[in-house]
Image (cartoon, rainbow, N blue to C red; front, side, top):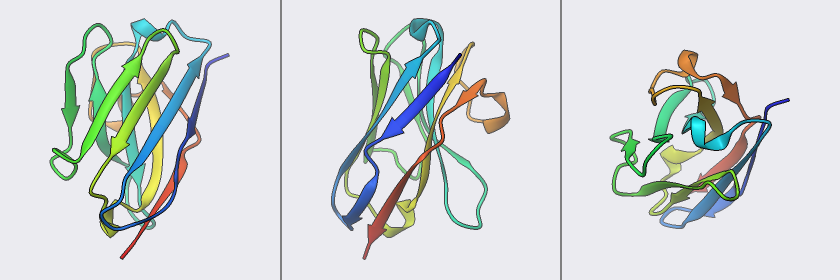
Length: 123
């Protein structure tokens, strides 16, 4: 049974930082490209960041480039999202997603999802 479990969300002031974690189980972690998406109230789920399944290459949405960093630890089957210089518009539920293929930016292409962790950025 595949499980993705996110943690690390919370309330932070604008300009602050948070680090999200997503632990995967039931999958061969190295075989999956890993992603972070987010969904703000009343908005569609949007791509945030991705990391290749077989290398360190990363990809980011323009809105988070140079502020967020995605990384992974294959020994812990964990993917991280370091979020710096947070803005109120970053407020959303953040979801971890896995794809048994090359990375993608469309939510419908993901194979597995976590339940999400809420990030709230106050102004």
